[in-house]
Image 1 (cartoon, rainbow, N blue to C red):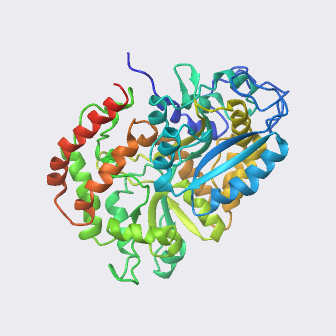
Image 2 (cartoon, rainbow, N blue to C red):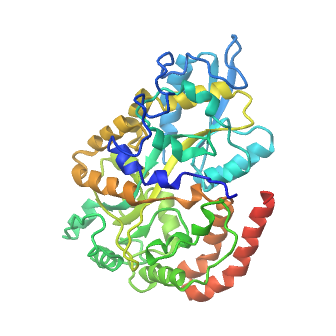
Length: 474
């Protein structure tokens, strides 16, 4: 029987959940099936010792490790300056060690630590791999024995259920990100271009319309002075480009976590890939991937003034807040299939199944997902929380930088209609991403025919999928 890896249906409920209603199996105590009514625990994790192995009590000081991916200084400052200081002050018997590495080194660092017998005690979706990959490798601790000690009534059961697998709670959502088209308002103002506020799902707002809008602000293509109208800033590869062309290559894998058959020859995938390739070489509104990577080394492309619009996750807003950049948002355009499907990233905190101090690690998870810290973290970083009360406050901090009413409308629709990112759902996704990013250079840097390149990739992709299953013992 296929394992239900993740509650994909629950992701569709998040729009209602974050609007403070709906989709919860609430029993009058925060929606956690009786677990959130525990009033003896506090946000600092200093009371109500949960069940489970390991200990942080008895006067013996222990050290726990959190693995972090650097994010242009936002979370990098939050973790040592806020989380570590406050957590250690509330829990003097625990030392929190933070290991921070660049995003593209997160997976390799994780694998090195695991292979060396010293896995991080706590981490989240901060690299290319995701929950299913960690879970099939038996890396994730079952938190069910601890849930009687979980005391945030503002994280509803339906949100927690996203990471409830076969009755086992495997993670506690820390942040919930949507994806939108963000744009640098100053660049459009300088170009004398007014951007319409399209309603989410408006069939008039198409990818062709986006290209027209991008052309209106692009200039000096390929030159040092260039401004590029658009980038696909999700960090994803071409296998996600075809969702709104009517194809999700990963759809057969969502039930099991494993993609059995490579099918890169579907005409819809070639058509979608060709569209984005044309944005580079024909329409000249999007940089080559090589140029885009160069811009990214400077900083967030929108903040550099080199890019006018970008499809990116709402984590980008932390940088907008930090620099006081005035920005606008747009929903994802409608594709040829008549759909508009944003990415959703529900990022949980996970504890290693090999942690030597799981009780101490749980205290950190409980601390970071408490109402007080969820509110403080979103105000500090500008990142959207999983806590519904803090989420309502998240929009307010962008007043003066954007139209917050429209931001809330677009964000809510994105969460309601969006699809969980496949990197959270597919085993071996880090390896798949590395393969795709390497192979697709022929398309996005060299203008080779997408259909021909995809056909050539297919047998190599099949071999990779077979290797992933073999490595997992499937």
